[in-house]
Image (tube, rainbow, N blue to C red; front, side, top):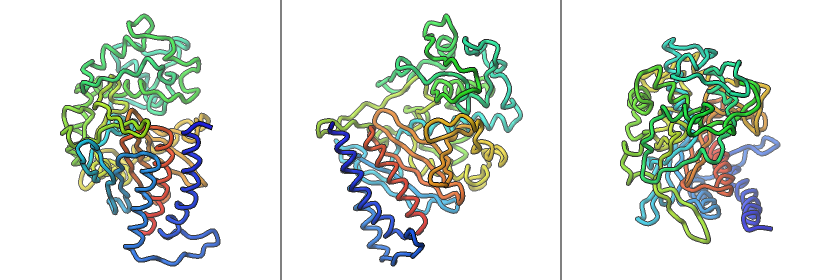
Length: 399
C-alpha cells in the first residue's frame, strides 16, 4: 500500500468523523429532520477554523482562500495559512491565485458578450470568423461551431502531453496566431494528429484546453482587440476586478500566492509561470474579486449597476448543451460545468495546474455559492478541497 493511499484512507476516516460533527454543529438537520441544538456563534467559528486548519495540515495546503456568496452578496470570506512561506506572508480573502480552468468561465463570457451583440450565432461555422479553415481531418466535411467549442464538443481530443509548455520567465509572448494554425492544421510546424479525436464534431465530449485557446482567438478576431485587453475593458474593469488579469505583468506579483509542491516533508516553490494557451487557464484573481463575476452570473448578468450579459444568455450558459455525452461526474453548458450530486444540481468550474487547485460552485436551487483556492496541487489536496466546499455550503445555510 503506497504512502498516498494510506494518507487518503486516514484522511477519509478523519473527515467522516470530524466532518460529520462540523456539519452537525453548523446546523444541518439529522436524517430524521430533528434540528441539532445550536451552539454559540463563537464556538462554531472557532471549531470551524480548527477543522479547516486540520484539513489543510493533513493535506499539506500552504494556504486557503475562500468565500460564500448568498443573496447576491459575499456573506463570509476568510484566508488561512501562508501564501508565501519563505516570507511569512499571511493569506487573506484578497490574496491572488492563478485559478486555472475556472478561467474558462471568463473566456466563455467574453465570447458570449459578442454573441449578445449579434456578431455570430452559436451554430455558425467558426471557420467563417477565423483566418484559417478549422476542420477535424478525420471528418473534413463537418463544421465546427461556437456551441461545440464552448461545450467541449468540437472533436478536439484531450490535449496531448507535448501541448503543455510552461514559461517560468512570466507571460508567454507567443501570439495566439499564427501559433494556433500551426498547431491545429495538418502540415503545421507544431501539428500532431493526436490533437484530433476520431469522433465527429458534436458526437462526444472531449475536454480541450486548446479549444478554449481558440475561443480566446475568436474573441480577438471578432472584436479586433487582443483577448486579454478585451477582458480587461469589458469584464474586469466594469466589474471592479482591478487586481485580476490573464497576464502576470498586469499585477503585483508580491500579492500572488506562490505555487507549491509538497514533497518529502517540504514545500517546494515554483516560479510564477505562463503558458501559450493562456485563455484556457491563466487568470489570476482573488476570491473577493472573482465573487463580482460570479454574482453577475447569479444575478441575471448584473453586478451592481453593470450588465455584462443578457439574462437569456446567462441562462443558456448554465444549461447542459449535449445531454447524451456525460463525462465523469459533470456535463457542460457554455463554459460552465454542471454536476448533479445527491439529487442537487450545481454549476460552476474547477481548476488545477502546477501548484494550484480551485473551485467555484453554485447550488442552483438557491444560488448559494462557494469559491475556494489553494496553492498546491495533487490528489489529496483535491479531495480535501472538495470536502471543504461541501462543508462551506452547510455553513452557508446557517448564515
